[in-house]
Amino acid sequence: MKTPEGLKYAKTDEWVKLVGDEATIGISDFAQDQLSDVVYVEFMIDEGDAVNKGDTVATVESVKAAADVIFPASGEILAVNEDLADAPELLNSDPYEKSWLVKIKLDDPSELDDLMTASEYEAYNADRE
Amino acid sequence: MTEKTIYELSQPGRQGVRFPESDVPEQALPDAFLRTEINLPELSELDVVRHFTNLSKLNYSIDGGFYPLGSCTMKYNPKINEEVARLPGLAHTHPLQPSVTVQGNLYLMHTLQEYLQEISGFYRVSLSPAAGAQGELVGALIIKKFHQINENYKRVKILIPDSAHGTNPATSSMSGFNVVPLPSDERGNVDIEALKTECDETLAGLMLTNPNTLGLFDENVEEVIRLVHEAGGLVYGDGANLNALLGILRPGDVGFDIMHFNLHKTFSTPHGGGGPGSGPVGVAEHLAEYLPSPIVTIIDEGDDETPPLFDFYEPTLSIGRMKSFYGHFGVHIRAYTYIAMHGIKGLRDIAEKAVLNANYLMTKVKQDYKLPYDRTCMHEFVVEGAWEDIPEVHALDISKRLMDYGFHPPTNYFPLIVHEALMIEPTETENKDTLDSFASALKAIAKEAREKPELLHGAPFTTPIRRCDEVKAARDLVLCCWIPE
Image 1: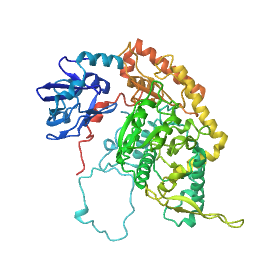
Image 2: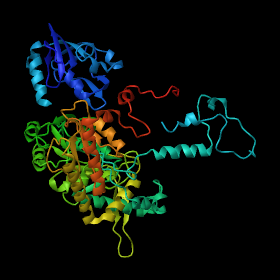
Image 3: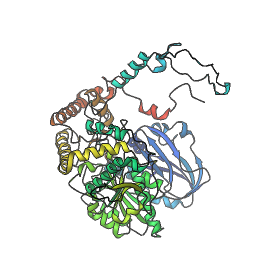
Image 4: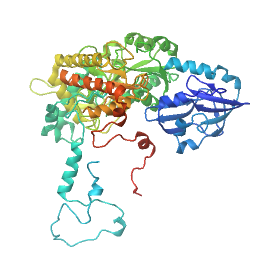
């Protein structure tokens, strides 16, 4: 299972890549493995929307289950990854690059301080196995 | 595939019915009504009979084999139910007949209402909801209307344990509530500490399945109900697993406010592709006027000479109608027959045997499969269909391989809180021989998983259609090249 350094991870299995006050959000390799083959992604937000920490980004549906992706911080949506509508399998094959879900401009980057580092997230997952 | 589609069997000009010469002048249909693009198959009567007979032989059914589909209570449906449902006096009635002409039907429905009240400990029952999930929607709408009438507009939150059926959060959400999941504790019960933190002035209610979908009796049930009531909420009971409690525990006595029954599960009517469900709802006395209409009642008690007169009524605060006419009357007849046939002792015997069968099978299966919540189970149990030392084998592979052994697979990947879940419900109608051979098949598959995993990955080998591509089925929704305009 890949857990790239430099990203931050939420307990609900989102990863966040922070550049300045812009954050890119996706779901982790562990999350896609638990879900198995993803068949459908439905976004709950549009570009330009203001979102709050805890809101639902999207629902990801696999052959086994459906799971919500949660915003780890508040901000404004800059971009939504439209490619996933036609190719939801990217979430399985490339969870950290091509299958980012949204980019947001954060209101307050310190909201991400609670998130885990790669090594903390790996330890957290080991406990859940 | 062993049987072609009816379109592939079609030959131009072949036909099954020859009409006699017309003895009236022909009148052509107006051109506007003629469609040439409809690609209707052309076959003889024998072609059609053989086609559908061959297809029917491919069905797997409870009449043909063991069907341990967890959470679905696939018990045998006694044929006497069908016999009674086909009695002309019942089968030939019409829903628009004046009620005075169908007093026998109303008597049956009224008696079924009373049976269900007695079995569950609830004050009143409405038979109208069409199936379990609609019963849940009724429950959520009653909770909503109850708080509205009491002007508690802040109560917008419904708590749902993480082991619940997906229909619980779905119906709560459809009713406009905010759904808050509750974790389970390490014994599989509702986590009381987590519940306490959610018991505030926004609490509308809680939906609880007991026994829960892990097949475990929630040992905290009385505490859960007390906490929700003290916080001003109502408690909905999902009656999906009532089979385990018949004649032993009445949910109404424990303090549940509302509950639906799955007549098709607990009271043995064909379901799951075999027939419609039926999801009557029972409530405690303080909610009796909220029930959906129509409900059967006695409008004239009668006397020694005259039998009582039955009719329908609508409760004063009713959430309204959920279903056209009176619910699934054909299912009511079968459930009534089943309850009347078993009687009080027979119903208790059903629950005892269902629980005994599940525990017998669990004890055998857990020799080879991990049992995450190792407790005495109720009517079903959940094991992990995967082993740490063979990570490439999954629950799905085990299920597919079971088909080669002649069994319907158990429920896969539910409940979600168990990794690679296999949920097994044998029901009371199976004998020890069947349980033993199913356990032997699971044992053999566990051995194969280690020694010849390709048998699991390639399974099923013996069915007319081999392993389906579930991902493609879910992603590519257009099945044919010809789409009607």
